[in-house]
Image 1 (cartoon, rainbow, N blue to C red):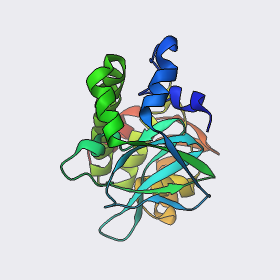
Image 2: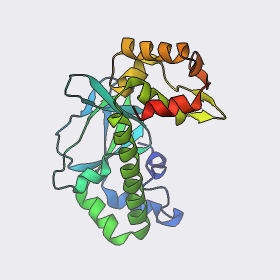
Image 3: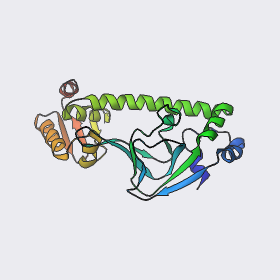
Image 4: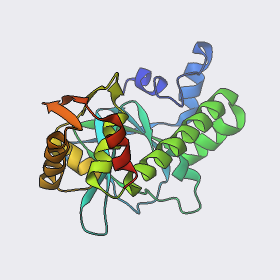
Length: 221
């Protein structure tokens, strides 16, 4: 393991240079490797240690009531995985975590994290800031998922990636359908209808908004 990867993680990046060696020694780090496609954690698994993705990328997903796989997000190294749940009363992973490529996970015992939160103000501030930002992200994701129509979801996604009416989808239709929690044919049909209704133009992953007001109206439906 390259300890530089850990020190680039948002919850560790502000540790002063002269304190980094002792900081790393106190964490009692262990590492685990996973191959592409392997489960790192499943929804309901107990969070005994802080998991930090130090290499590669993973996807966090859950199964909807209809049986559709819902992609919550893709997480890239170096970043923690569900850090707030380490201290939750119901300290279980809220999602399935699957390796998108060969990955390395750093495991830090809960006791070591408590010691750092108690004695290391820099670490405490970074840990609290990261978890606060996660609450904001998840509230926005919940707002997105509560949008009922596919066109509404598309409109929200496009508007979040728009600059001067030009946008990029950011992912292919298969990945986008998984992210929306819908089927690919349904997504393709909605995109085609938005093009036919002259709300957007689209070539590949790049497009332009033609009717901004109509697009905003789709979100409220």
